[in-house]
Image (tube, rainbow, N blue to C red; front, side):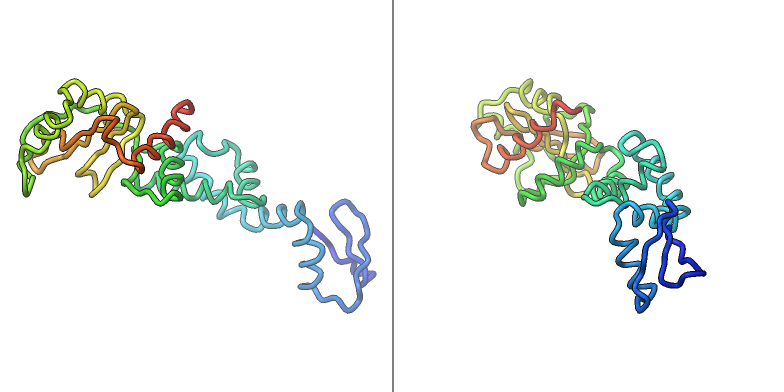
Length: 229
């Protein structure tokens, strides 16, 4: 970016050909900190050039996994990486999240992050699994195999409502490596269990009036992202 003028040790020339007069006692590290690191434009260009090969490989990996959720051009990717702000931290976080949760999206990651910041952790947020589940006794239950039926009776929830809470959810929350899937809607919640036999059954359910404070916060966060799908 800057070239020291060999004919004049006290002069540096920038890439526009403009002379910069440097204190003769200034060493290269001091010069670099003041005139390169201190200049946002030059600092970006230097970092982008120095790391171009490793950045190119990273960009290709990110594009392969995240597709249109990151810039299409390598130059724009480097601008996000080296410009000030937290955009690159978000891209890195989403890449890591998507790698561990392939059935997710950027919105899923943002919902997960916002809830985490609120101190709420109901599991990983994924795109909803619309595969059918059944209202059956739970063979894996340690205490009450008929829990779902009792909860439906206590809360006056119909079979159709249980299924509708599931089908209307914008996202699902996975816990215990996918053994539990929670589906939240403004009218109620259904929880699906994946049993050892490979059968998907409804584990429990709540109506809107039964929801606690954390669940209402979850619904509020989800609704803020619903129009961005």
